[in-house]
Image: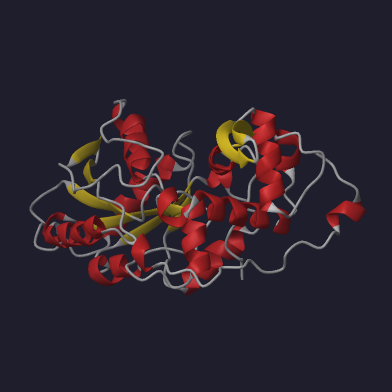
Length: 319
């Protein structure tokens, strides 16, 4: 949808009000157990395949994974590239390389885009490294790691589909926490013989700041109810306006962009016909009225963004 240059130059919120929120409770206990399980399986592993969301290439990746598991060769896959604004793709790769990540690729595993590069890269990384007392074994074992809901299981299934012409071997879901334990090894290729270990998503136990937490929540790495759908929806509106990505206006028939989340959710609820019954006390007794269902509107707004229907964005600032 096109807007006049005058509208595009409107001043939006320059800063998001985080309201002194505490993110300490956003780290579920089962994630700590998941990291310990990964450590116990390290002897079986030749290489690490880390999957992360392409919309947040620098934010939210768990430093404990690198510290604890980083003795192995490492490939970073920035998945969901179809949802990310990759205008500055080369600068992203350069910055990651400066941080020590020399092997990084973007991928859209739902379309097998760039998935065909993964097995050759993994094979080369393993052949150029020590085999960790497993030189007599010709097969390769790769542990797939990352924060929740970045598409680890989808990457496994995509590699398997590409090389073995097989269907799903690992559960896939749109919410964090589908994989709770390190699973049985999954064969994904026969030439070379390669197995992948699916693992539970593990967040860092100390999210560095609230904005990083909200980026993770917006991408679905944290359960919505732990943060609050209204807060995530407000941060989404702030982000879309900051990027001058106004597709939400046309999608919900709003007429014009807006920077007030309550007004936007009210209009979304009306557009979708989402209402809730509310009891109102009046001087003559109780009256049941219909009111906009703000929670249903917030949920729809968030999930529509996650599907890519509201446009591509890069949530991290590219250096």
